[in-house]
Length: 103
Image 1 (cartoon, one colour):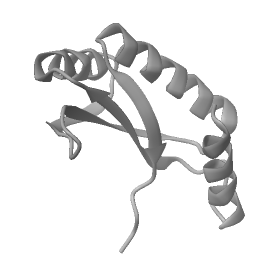
Image 2 (tube, one colour):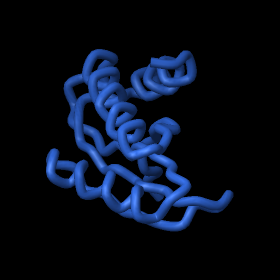
Image 3 (spheres, helix red, strand yellow):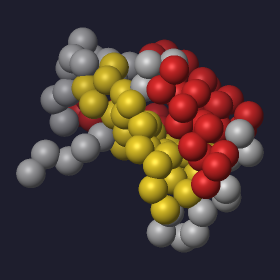
């Protein structure tokens, strides 16, 4: 995990999120080619993830991957490693994660 991943995870825990709570996460994968983004999304759906494919603001294509898991380092590291592998195998790049903001 990158330093900013550790900092964001620690911030979640510092604001009162329990490490035992299942939380919604969004992971972001970028691709230059719409067809490859679609193939990656299908592979992730077959692995049990919900995905959305949309044009990226900076050009190219964004695959948003929705996951629900505990906010603990080993779980997050495992998912990031898997998503990096999928992105790379379809010519894309993993670009981090976030949690939906409650309004």
